[in-house]
Length: 102
Image (cartoon, rainbow, N blue to C red; front, top):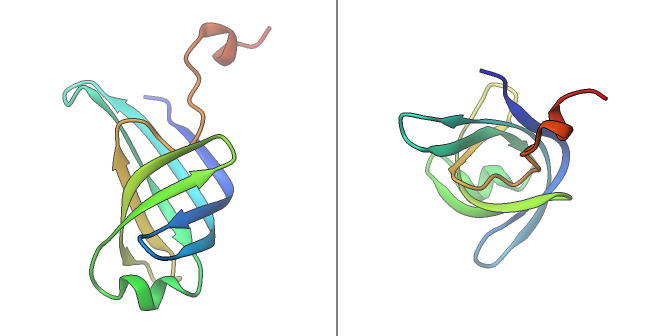
């Protein structure tokens, strides 16, 4: 299964804050669940105080999309896991012209 994705700057929005983050995102359609699952890591110094060891519901915005997701635990490098279901916060090719070289 080939993955779609995005790497670059993004904006993470909470109820009362807007945070600029660096994001590495990927995703794939899950046929058993019948929906698109996207996931990845985001990093910004402010996330440690906002997420701690819990979960944070967010809206993640990239230059090509926006989606609701959840930020959870950090990895060893201080990047926080982010994930969501359905429409991803990045462009996903939907036509053969977008995925096949001309």
